[in-house]
Length: 343
Image (tube, rainbow, N blue to C red; front, top):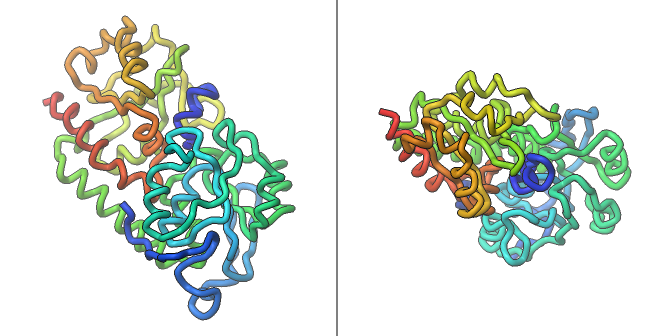
């Protein structure tokens, strides 16, 4: 998930339906249009990514998604993949993310084949992917290595992230998936609709404008502080909030989308608002009870909010073409309540 926040905890900190065309009775891998005529427009298309470039001569018919967000973008554009990762974090009883389940129902489609995903995207089920016989693999927001990319490319043309693993802006996921699926115009419309919804949400809560915010996750040993490049934080700035200097002062770890901070140094987290992700109310209370946390000015003055529960955490970790609007009201309402206490 960015990797989903879920995996953030498990792996060290690794951690509605908007303008998409409905397609009752859609088959996995197919889109509302036929494979001919307008569906062929825009091909061949060449897409660049971190490991080179690929050229798709025609519109893919059997789409497989890996990582985070590509499934959502594909569904939002009306294309049902033949296989998607199992949602080990934030999924419903069928291990499908709720906003994906809702979109599948809207499209009148069955749940695609669920790929084994025991650790949130680190272990790739190559044999299962090959068995799904995809003609394109979308891993636009993922952590695949160059070696894994080569193996996947032996199965089907694979589109990796544009630059850094687990750091693709959700907008870029939509744009890339749209280009790969011959849905460039639809992707532009989708982005415009989501951007409008986000900005309207921000405008409806003027108390958010210009307020600095720090987003963090307590990983039981230290605090994971999300950096400015992280899509979680980009979403917050899209609402009109800002990133304080304190975030840049936290040394980045690994892929650079977060940094670790010891509890003893929590007083360095200077901001108007503090946003805490937590899986349960119990784990949130444990965080708030830590002496270094409960003495923070944001906590003492009520200038903090918490996103609690796997589904809500996953919805913004990072946001996607479907999850953003699914959780938009809850996020903005909570943030606005905390921001209001700064005046």
